[in-house]
Image (cartoon, rainbow, N blue to C red; front, side, top):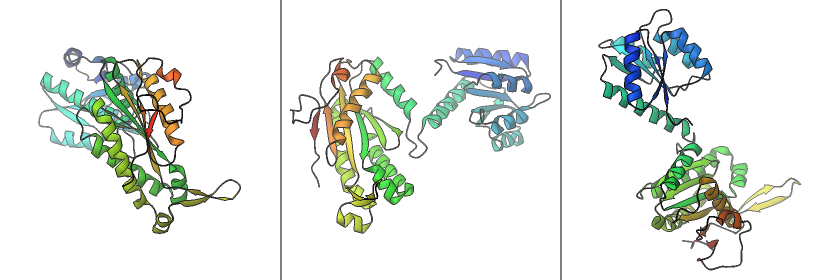
Length: 338
């Protein structure tokens, strides 16, 4: 991702283009210019900006023509567009919004308002682009940004990785609609618990994998509350007969029926206290090993990482299952059943 976001200004008025370029550059943006609609479309075929600031009234292809082209092309249909209109031209504003403009700004404009509208639109665009389509939670790019921000600041934090066990068998047995219901149930539970904590972040990696970031002192309590509530709720997703039996049956590749227990939740908890994990890759590697160990155990599990050396990920190649103390790693605790 580019460090400085790029704005394409499309306006046939050279004086106004110069003013817009100056204002936006003062606001911290990189600015590209196009003097008419055709030049704008040609530039957009070469490289995509982060946002288009588009004048309505231009000779040849006007702003509406350009907007229609943008929205009809797969490569540019998602680009945020702010249209520039003359003050009081309400029909033009309505027409632009109907055709897919994201916002509009009246001329003459106030520089501070222009910069704020551009920043707000870019922030909204990033959020929508990064969000998981099922849960609406921030996706992989947003997760990486959040972790990098905390690591680079040397901030102590708790990193929690959530993964469902036996979810594929549930999905195969009940279908993807019921599977999605389990994922949204878990997302709602995570949001309720995680986002009620101070300085917390929640993201959806994809599928049945979620992550949370919290203050170090909140991590253990969060994991325990979430697992306890999940175990209380998950059986409600099963049909009464399957719930009574305590398992579902599915044929394997040979046609032999296999029994699968209820979906459970594994949580890998990594506490970063001294800035020794260094980068996101090492942090994820440790969490992945802890998760792998937890998924080898029956039922819902909380697996803790308590070491702080830089070589933690390299050393963590085969998590032991020999009942170590919590001061070593990994430590597993089977949550008490309600």
